[in-house]
Length: 214
Image (cartoon, rainbow, N blue to C red):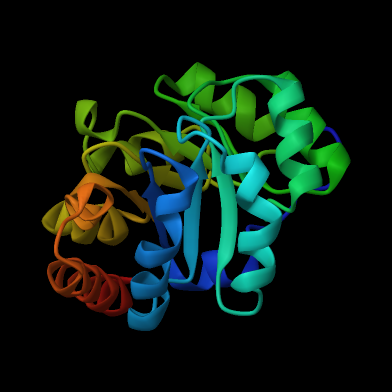
């Protein structure tokens, strides 16, 4: 490993739950984030596939400072990473295994969770200094994969992402995942005009389950 491994942000590590927010536009974030914070969500990954995410990030960081870790996800190159860090991202998430991205994040002092699926991909990111590794898509392997990885890599920290539902969250955490990354099963249609009361119910269910099993 090159240099010291950065810990995940405190709220993210303590809550063991990252909500992946993928909206039609960054203007849609606020109404959803307000609900998530109110029910106890403490870490949200804003995706670069949502237009204007970087532009709005400083404002959102200021608005939710002290209540929420805002990370930036779907980062695939060092320029995106640089802009996200400068805008105030508390952590970086990638869908790919790239030691260049890991090194750049570590050098900037920003925790990073790079994606991968195979043992070689995940270990390359972990040994380069990743704070945790994102198993993506998690539905392709299942919770037992945590134990399989920890055979040869006993210290590796795993965050499953992609299709993790409420029941899956329990199984992954019981298997030893450091946190779970959840999108559609929690957010549902919230970013397309869906009922915020229904969003609240789903979010509460995830918060309660994770609190019991983390």
